[in-house]
Every structure is written in C-alpha cells, then in structure tokens.
Length: 117
Picture 1: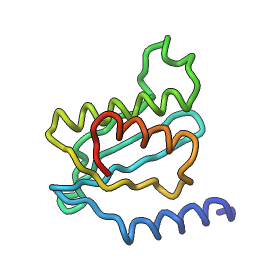
Picture 2: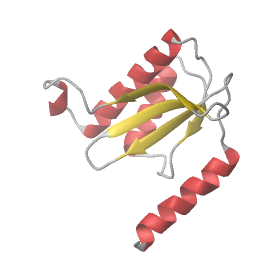
Picture 3: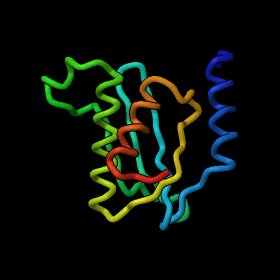
C-alpha cells in the first residue's frame, strides 16, 4: 500500500475510535470516490445500515452537474430520507477525508435538510 492510503486509513481509524452510532443517534458515514459520493446512516450497536444514498443512480440531467453540486443533492436527499425514518440527530463521520469540497457540501446540505450534528 502506498503512503497516501495508509495515512487515510489512520485518519479514519482515529475518527472511528471517537465516533460511534447508536439507535438514538446513528452515525452519518461518508465515502468519496473519484467519481461518486456515498452517504449512509448506520446504527453501530446493531450493525445495520438504516439509510443509504449515493449519486450513483442520478438522472442523466443531474450527471451534467459538478461533483460538488451532486454531493449537495446527496446531502439533502439523505436528510429527507432520514427524516422519513424519524432520524433527527446523527454523529458525523467524514471517513478520513478532509472537511472541504464535496464533504463540506454534503454536510451543509444535510444540515439545511434538517439533520442535527
């Protein structure tokens, strides 16, 4: 493994030691690939994914938007889906990524959508 992957893994493990989701306050986990962004709301005690959203299956018209704009849409969509399942507060897990760009856009739109973290 190259050094970049090792450092990301270390950052993520440092975060995961401190951040854990429960049934009352699940974990909002983010994964960002070069092309797409994925968000999940996870109950770590039960080991289940409560809500999962990604920009992988967007409409063709949405694919023309920038990756940051699509991340914002994923944030608002995960907030809407979580509210439908009666989830209001979450713990944010940025997944070892820096809190800029697509990660920040997703978090901002999830907050605007009604999630509290």
